[in-house]
Length: 324
Image (cartoon, rainbow, N blue to C red):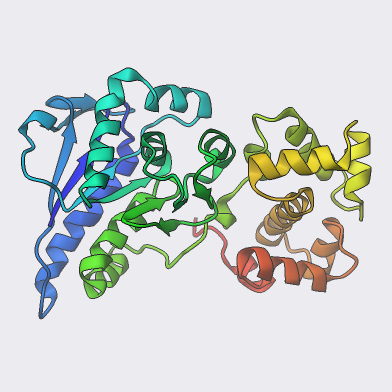
């Protein structure tokens, strides 16, 4: 199986390492299977013979001019650019037009495409994600949604599959993306590699989302997020929040829907649940006390919210403390 990992200057050290490590692990472990799939022949490709990583390290690459045979799959590694503005400038830079052209050509020839984290912006910029479901890093959802409205974005997903395209979420989701490609050839090998790499069986980025971060970039949503946090223990109405922010409820609805893909109530629920999660994991407060702290008369409503938004019980949330 021939895989091309396409990189540009500024490639993320962690994401590229995760991709190479996942495929390398699969190659080692395939020998343990009774009926192993073909080995993964992975090449890191750029326009020249090397690129500089985000940390300034030299990454040797295969020049594009030396690539003749088609790949079975093409992956785009993330770049170490965390802010939406500079990221959009990078993916739309004429100096990276070669990568967009290569993505379009591979897609036209039926080559499976994949990207994770900020690398998903290259796929979207090329146009191949139009009309397709996709995910990206959770903190980039608003920017992605605004620039690429034709993409069916769900930034809560870890991995999302479209027609011949796989996208994945934040940094370490590169491993999930790589293993999803291994899975297409050998589910048994993908599962074995997952266990050797101690990768969680996870499907959602929801537990990692920081509400005040996703609000950035829109003054109204920033103001709304702060207002909700200031009134988090109250049972308030969205109309009250909108009025105190000096806008209509409809304007607030439009703003959160356009930027976040959700209603003001859903965003307020996320803020409440984020605060509740922090209290459950860092304090000894009872579930009932936590519920009151985040604006619920009793714990049943908070339990229902956790099930609906995270697919977890409050006990499970409390139990998933960081191992360190």
